[in-house]
Length: 480
Ligand code: NAD
Image 1 (spheres, rainbow, N blue to C red):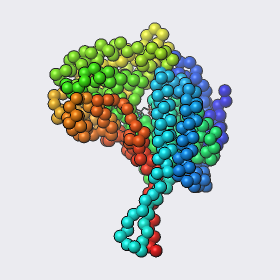
Image 2 (image 1 turned 180 degrees about the vertical axis):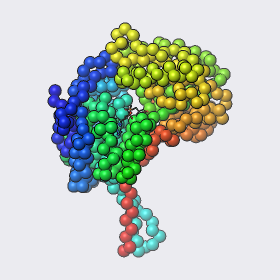
Image 3 (image 1 turned 30 degrees about the vertical axis):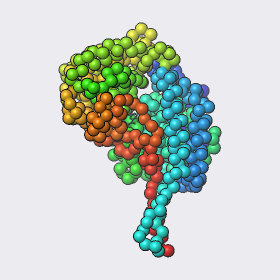
Image 4 (image 1 turned 90 degrees about the vertical axis):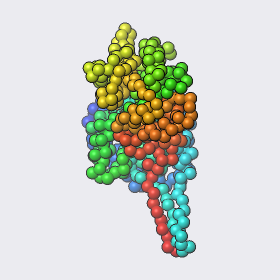
């Protein structure tokens, strides 16, 4: 297999120093492929290609509705190649095939949404209050974008950046996680086969500190959009400040899932399990803090623990499996240490806290874990586990529910379960998180903004704001 897996200036090339990296499936360790491990020089070459393409202006000169049509063609091509993409995503991440197929639907939905939006946001007239003046706002592409994405939803998180960047007329360098490169390579193939001008879309692969860092540091990058962990986000924001780039950050979460006593018990329970354990909890919006009204807390927690122990772990192509492995041995060690620290601080381990056994020993499986008797300030209620771990806290009444829900430096997402619509709306409005679900968990819409309050990030993806992030507003004031 060729290791010419970096896509720079319309050409597939190998790393300039010949370096490679093997990608193994986290479910069983099988070799998925060998790709180039890029260097900082490769990243700089990709930035130069994106800069030159932007400065030539070919893509930005394509009328916005036609750029939108291109995105709709991408959506159609992804639909045709859906099975190939889903399989590649599953092999890289170890997630169940059915989840990768859902991700593909969401990716196609994202390109379709921005394809339709592209032509609708072409500027507006401003009333200058003076008949001798024509005043107009035009939206221009920001320029060269550095797009950095994580391993949990490798192509979906990248698509949330690629689609609006292209809709706006930008050029970009994409750097997916070094652990999960394959679907982003396939994406470049689609953009190339559909005739995107060379240099508009570039792909570099490799370690964050090597090929990712230039995307936040280089003077020729105008915007860096990053999805990943809080500490990396801080480093990127600091590096980007030296050249005053625009910065968009989609970081972690410690998301409250608040269950009132008057909730539909079964629906709340089903969703609490899904919120905490789907994709083994490796979801930025995972419902990792379950906050249950005191009067039902014991029954709810007992049932949660009983059901969590029944969750079937298994490989990505095992149709009976309900959740899969963690991404790597290192990540499993991190989750293991996190749970051990919580227990040492006084949390009670109700279930889980162990590695997969038997056939699962070849992968990085971790059993669904419930911790209760937790208290404010304990690391397990403060820090993101990014694994199949849920803590249970209790409350009495709306005030306390809101106080606990907001007791986090993050602010990405949360949920409220109650059959009292007035109460759930009141609580939803007071929670300081970017998305609040009422009587549901996890659904998102491409037409609705996604992003975080507090240290969950800066800026928004999706929705009209998700396109604006890639645009500069220019005011043209014409004194006739
Ligand atoms: P990570 O921060 O370790 O890595 C994310 C990306 O940044 C990777 O591509 C990595 O190579 C790159 N990177 C690392 N160091 C870098 C540097 N110095 N400069 C530039 N790039 C660098 O995160 P991860 O472990 O891949 O992903 C998990 C995190 O992502 C979790 O915290 C999760 O909550 C977050 N996440 C957030 C959202 C959201 O929408 N808010 C979505 C998915 C994941």
